[in-house]
Image (cartoon, one colour):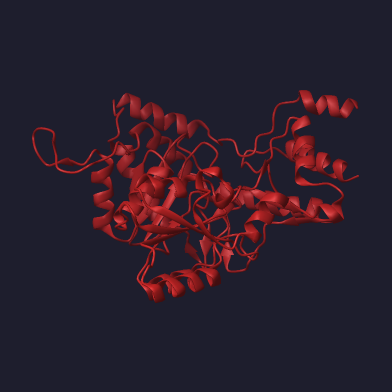
Length: 384
């Protein structure tokens, strides 16, 4: 009991807190000193260049105020219009489905595969073949790389190319991850990243749209800046958006990007340490390693077979919370959300099972050794 009370009153262990330091503060001060307190400035331009360098040759980038804004613009640049359908992973955060609805289009959801937990490539191929035969292909496919784990992109890209469908990679959680040695976000037609406070690098709030199509990225910047036409006055001939990132936040992003490799290494190490520390517990499983990708392990996720383990994820989540440790169920599939109750979904059993049996563990790159031990000790104690 003493140990329980001590843990409960210790500092909270968060799932994925920001990991910032003195360099981030120096870049913010630089923006203030130079008076670039606006959605334009040297940090913004440099952040776009540096992201492009990290992702490899031929990649162009537009810094935005959120990953959701990047998704919205990617869909617009893909030619999606009201009344269109867009295929999307059902096992995801709500942002891509919301962005589809922003345009007045309809999301069509596809289940995950057990191998990657991401969009089922074989099921996608069946759906596109069936729809092609009826002349109702979707305008685009949004594939989400959950928890830094890559979908099986090669067959997904192949079937999209076969049917002339745009592929958008929602890599919001996957900066620093690769698939067959290629950075995620650079395989499809458009890639999207998030720099929210809980992501592997953060600008507090922000996102990035990337593509090999320089003209498309230039247009994204135009649309993100209220679509202001070239003129000495404010001239507008089409709808635009207030989506550009602040120069101040871009300074934070530049500093964070300098330590991306270290943050990925720390999170991957945490994943391996969790596996080693918990591998003997009956009924526990981990988000898989496929061999095709190198995930950034943004979050370490486990599954629990309640029949074998004798507990379920909610019992464990409550026990962790009682000891001031944050954990979280895996994403509730979009086809189960009230907001999308009327949406079409192909399959669903795998993502539904992952939601019922999965839990995210504290995985921040700033997680201290004693905090890790506290998490592991709590988990092992619940199993006993």
